[in-house]
Image (cartoon, rainbow over all chains, first blue to last red):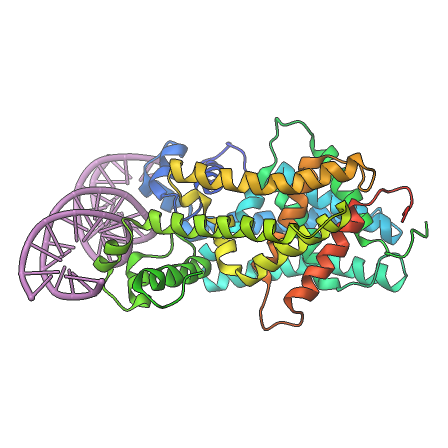
Length: 197
Length: 197
DNA sequence: GTCTATAATAAGATAGAC
DNA sequence: GTCTATCTTATTATAGAC
């Protein structure tokens, strides 16, 4: 994660802040420079273009997101536990790195065609992990047999949305929110007839 | 809903298309004019500014959304049915007027302070209807006693997200998707102990 | 109600000094 | 690695003819 130790990271941190607050297009290189304490021309020493700066943010976020999920899933054995861990991991990451994740979900259109494909492929790989858990759960009779793709989108967007409204100084902390979502989703995925547990 | 019968509506329809495809900031008045078959200066005869055009789109969308929900809820009596109807109504409206709704959820930052407050107030009123159903459901023991606000955000963002990926020529039609969401949410809201139904 | 022409401004990016 | 100065281009919006 970027800290303020060198200018390249400072610029990135400032850009994340501004892209989150105002959006990518509404943020100018001048503003990023002002926030970083340098002149706008100096930005181009560190990043070849505004678009490359955005790409750099999104790439790091997606890589860290997937690494975090895999790390957390290593301990989970049965299917329900895997889904619980996956949801918790997703919510936690999105709440703790709220700004980057919000950008990763709202500013994909700012990317070049090539960069867009790279990020979307990373996102697909991540989604695939969730879809496999749902599919396995349906096969083993733990989850209901609704449409796997739709449910994975539903679950992911549900948790992702947390990043849009979460207030770090609000009523509930990260783990409390993650647990509410976790219960909601496990219930939602349960078979409708009766709870066989 | 705007049709192509007069220039003011044509401009609005073209703008919705472009704001959805490219985003508000990435869309220029020139492009909207080109799509409408007039010169860019002529846009200003119909709308005083680009921001007013955006506001006009968002205002119509929010008003129609709330009217549609109230209309649908008029028939529903018990709480579970009310939630089913509300979810179905929300999903249906968001899938059928996908572009406007996507804009209404992603381009609020493009508004002036005054217009922003008007739209957010309309959104709060709409959310309030959902929160009341959840609260009543919890009081009567139909739904679990989780946090009302969190759950209403969860439900709304869940359904709203449909608008972001729905493909009108895709595998599933509007009603099929709405029903999947409906079941998921009713299960998710159910009490965790055992299904008392 | 739509046009042409243009004003006013701000953007992303580069050149070259230090 | 950061600066000043500048190029190029695009933007929103207005003035005034038709």
